[in-house]
Image (cartoon, one colour):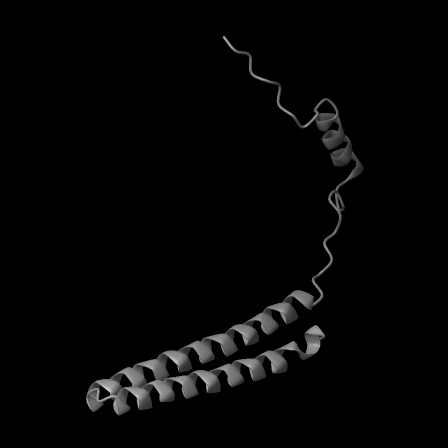
Length: 113
């Protein structure tokens, strides 16, 4: 599976899972009614369940779209950074080189008392 085709494939999986969850919610609704639970409470639970299933579907579809957008932005050519020191005069480079020549980049260890 290539990354170029991932988004439509993932969207299809999400849509299929959504349909299955709606089916499960309906079966639970019908089962609850058939065993004599109150119609009003059954409807309320069913509608809450549908709302959460829709929210999950929408969030998942939004996430894969956002991921695709982020990948596209990351793949855009970034302007090339000029190497450090470019644009400095020879005198400036010499001063920097002299200042850094005696350093190792590591601080001396502290002495214990």
